[in-house]
Image (cartoon, rainbow, N blue to C red; front, top):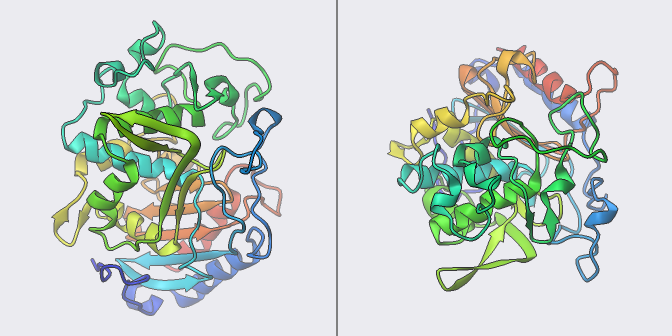
Amino acid sequence: MQFPDPHDEGGFERVAPEAVGIDADAVDDAVNFHLTHGTPDETVEYHMPDLEPFDETEGELGGFLGPVPDRRGGPAGVILKEGKLVAEWGDTGRVDHCFSCAKSFLSLTGGIAWDQGRFDLEDQVGEDIDDGGFESEHNETITWKHLFQQTSEWEGELFDRPDSIDRNRGVGKTEGPGKDEPRELEEPGEFWEYNDVRINRLALSLLRLHAKPLPRVLAHELMDPIGASRRWEWHGYYNSTVDVAGTTMESVSGGGHWGGGFWSPTTDLARAGHLLLNEGEWEGKRLLSEEWVENATTPCEQYENYGFLLWLNTDNTLWPSAPESAYAFLGHGQNVVWVNPANDLVVVLRWLDLADDRGEREDLPNQDRFFEKLLAGL
């Protein structure tokens, strides 16, 4: 297994696809599919279609709580096989918003804390975090595992956003009530829901647990050791600064729903994916435990296609063309870090159009079509 040089832009050894057992025509077919099915290119202004009237705020951020890039890039991506670069397209060095890929980076920072013995998954969060967020009768039974699996049903308001704003959010669901319909809370651990307010509650809890900003934790423990660039960024909101042990720190957001979030070059995302492909080890050094990677890629009981802030392919549901063991960081705009242990593959896709122009699928069709074309070459 190859590893790239530290802090080299990209840095992975470039080889012809045939050198690692992939048909070059299949690689070209997949890449061309992305280039012809991309979201708008760099001339199109940044856009967040999920913004709702409730989310709009006055001031210089123009409706967002956190910063947003002025523009976004066009389709870009890389394909790694056995740690070697077999294809690269678009501007892979551009720093672009990753949207909910940030959630998976929260999983990594959580894994660091778990490896350091800072919490147990079955611990009630309120036993470790004493900031008032877990004192109610409903919230006091929430465990760390619930937060990482998005089954916490945490109730409250954080950074001017109530949890109810994302109740019934349809991400990952094909049926059920819409987001504009009320929903009574279930008991913690009994219902899966994609809810950015609760994700931000996890980020704040991890900040208090580490007692240092999460970008610093991520940089020191993972991103610097794997040789990532120094150009990635992780933002919070204008109102997400908190006191931690007498020091003012910014709590970062776990997505771009209201601005902020994780911004990164494609090449840095590839390194993060390669770390997980190697089960947390980098050039013989253990950065993240195998146990955490296994936990993070184990299906949630309440939703089989979700682990610890990673999307899974249980029963080949998300990507029928791919091995069941494949998993991914997924973000809006279709930002994808796809890890396929069965075939020693890591694929990063930026700005892939979600829509299926054949009208055959409604969930992640173009991702699966890309993978189908690529895997045909093995």
